[in-house]
Length: 468
Image 1 (cartoon, one colour):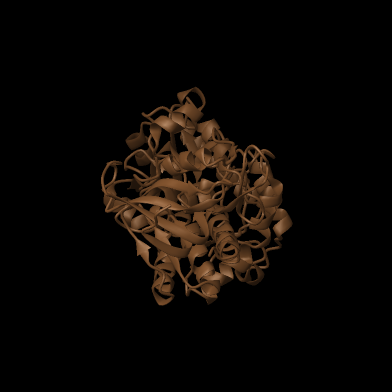
Image 2 (cartoon, helix red, strand yellow):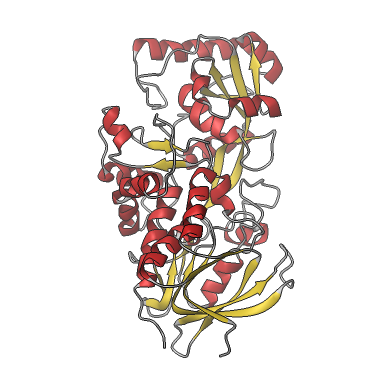
């Protein structure tokens, strides 16, 4: 086979998993390249909320929060309805704090000094980047790649995975100077991997045709939080190369997205950090609460979609202090501010008397310390919603994350479907892989998963024997 160029390790994808793999691989071998089909690096990782779950972290110690990898794993299994591949989920939980500290000590990532308690987690364990964005991690990773002489080739579309006579991966065929989404654009080039290939191309939430094949409920009318390039072609190539598909129909919707903006936007973080933990979720038709606002995403989405329900989240002046994107939300009209509950009810066309009764009942629960009938956890800093002004956001569920993908083992090797053995010199990490989160991923678990298995994949890829 004729090759245009060679590297020890070829990484496809420039998000959290791909860059983590490249950095770890470069520590052990001479040459690593990162290939990215889009015109800018980072993919979904850059536009994510920058939320990182870590069990037994320094901030938890400061706040006297009792946590452990075992508890984090139990939360993952509960949200995932025990469809999780437990040995993979355990690694994420066990290495979550180690990986968080790697981003701080090795990469210089900055986080806010307070933890968040996201839905489905038993305790507050979520760090948030200083700029409330995944870019707060991606940018330091890109800097480290430059320092380590790791080239990141943009507009390089993965056209083929090239195998030898034994079915082991030899390299990749790309379309260089590719112009998204024209799959016939660019010039074909073949890149040989002297050691291994790492696939870290993310999920397929924007691939409306492919996702509807896996889950027909997810029609093309349903909006998506992902960047435009989150499509299925790399997954399809991996399956053609013999990879085992895992749980491809398990596709998550985000319940916290705004009706009044496209994509993930700024409203999603408002809901996650303020509206759900410190406010209430209301059925517009009745003015009633109907769910534990801190439930995992699948339970929230199921409740919100029940009987065509339309929902808003409401929070007061005290609770809204946790919303790091508030000013952007107000500026864009995603969140609206009201001087009273009466004004909020009128603007949102919610029946006033039931809404006031709902707010009063919720406040009474907090004041008396009673258990919430929906099971919502009551953190120490939760206060009654009695401090105007009040804020509301109109919610809609959007396709957000693919729990399914290719099967890997604990070494991040891709597993062949016909032999149940690893495909030689083929590794994968991040959302392209399946099974870790089961039926539903907990918020803030994607970044640790990507970083943990990205580092594992890069390290093991670099330890492969060099082809002559």
